[in-house]
Image 1: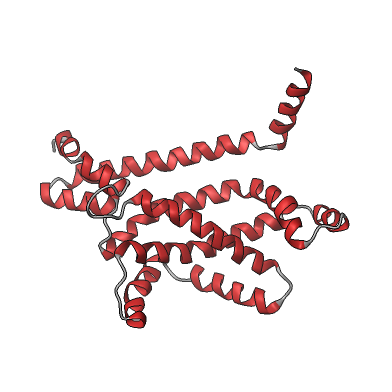
Image 2 (image 1 turned 180 degrees about the vertical axis):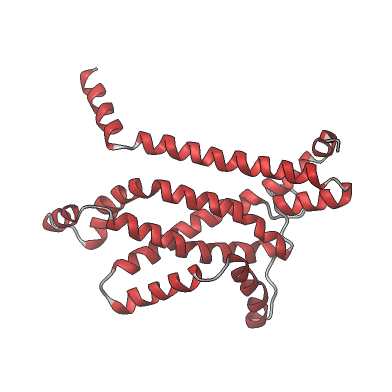
Length: 238
């Protein structure tokens, strides 16, 4: 079996510009879906995580129910829920991209919320007591004391979940959204060269995931207490 690099070279614009970046007449795009899903899912995840930590049951119980429901079903099912149910409720069919983005945000927020909850709980109780004793309100304590320390502890788990989100964008192809996997499928069916296309697909996903992992390790080392302390010492000595 011969490997034809020309298939990839001849279709790289469609695969990368349209499939990966979403630049083209088809919309969609893997990064155009993954990045907003990470940002919006993180925002909703912070809300869910903090709601789980409150002692008010009318707030914490719905958050627990939310997490248990969406962690107990596969993402593909959530995508189909949005694909089929929203037109039934609203009478209008949403674009493929909007359906996929909504499903990803709602689904991933359950996992990100648990990461936030674990990160906040990893902060020593003494930090909470000291912040409250200094007269800070609950919101100020979370914003200025707890969350900055919690984020440092959450970075490895957050990056792992972001890599999962990036790879899971391939599931958006089941509703016809044009992302990297869908673009590779189209080229494969047209050129009858599946081996080249799926090998190229695997390489692109691996490069992106590995880059995110490397960035996370560098960020984690830069914000570690030892690195921050050594940086302060060097500045004072200079």
